[in-house]
Amino acid sequence: MRVNTGFNVTGTTSRPQYRFTDSERNLNYIVTFRYSDPNTLRLEIYQNNREIANELLTRESNQLIRWALMLPKAGARG
Image (cartoon, rainbow, N blue to C red; front, side):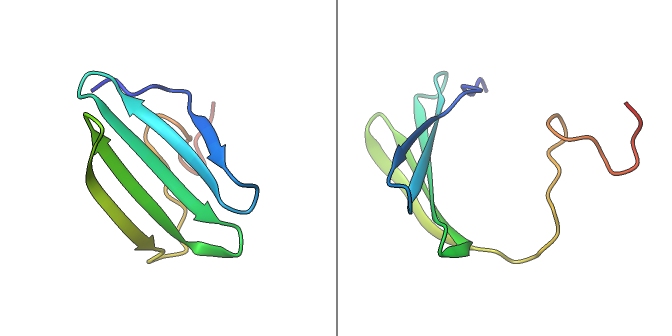
């Protein structure tokens, strides 16, 4: 899977939308959140301009998620 490493930000200042693309699968991901509700976000997924997912997701933990290639593990030396 090849995901565009950049993203486009649209929406409003109180409800930004981050848009990502997977050009190999022709998928578009839109993540929307509100600053007034930091524990909830909406995930929308489109393929060939057809909505295949539209989910309202809530935080289940306060634990920080460290993506394998993006952030070093705690205590790691660089």
